[in-house]
Amino acid sequence: IPVHWAVKRLKHLLVARKGAIKTGPFGSQIHSSEMLNNEIKVYNQKTVIDRDIQGGDNYISSEKFAELATFEVYPDDLLVTTRGTIGRCMVVPHDAERGILHPCLMRVQLDQKHAINRYLELLIQDSGFVLEQLQLMSNATTIDVIYSESLKEVWVAVPPTDEQRAIAKVLDCETAKLAEIRSATERTIALLKERRAALIAAAVTGQIDVRGAVA
Image (cartoon, rainbow, N blue to C red):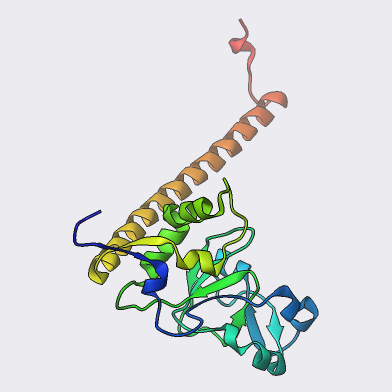
């Protein structure tokens, strides 16, 4: 890495407060029957995977929220999926409604003077660098769960924050181009499949004279 970059454990990039990295409550602390038709949102894995902060219909009562207040989600928290589909990330926007973590989510609160959310999001979700370290820690070829204590210990290459923003901007621009190419390719494939199906249908129903093609 460039000599002017630092290399630090993730725990040294967090804000200086208790709970700066925290997994959602244990399943025994919150049951499905408590997440219906109430007031305070429960942000779950689907919220992050779909990147839809408004999505989901899990809500708890104000009374239950008081019990679980240490799991509250705040604007600028980086949410990370920790079970099943692991390592997907999303930054909580400022207009998000009040809510708490689902047991399958983790919040990471970075000190933005040292590391910006989007940079860490790319490292965790897209680079493979963080998940590979977690695999080595667990002595497994695959991992099904991310634990907060393990995530704290991963090593992160830390450029100056202006370079982090520049890296994130370039990657977002380039991946947007790739996404457009993929979308265009998928549209072309779909159109070719339609034309193939139409050609076959026309041939087998006698709409095309194929006698000249017979050897």
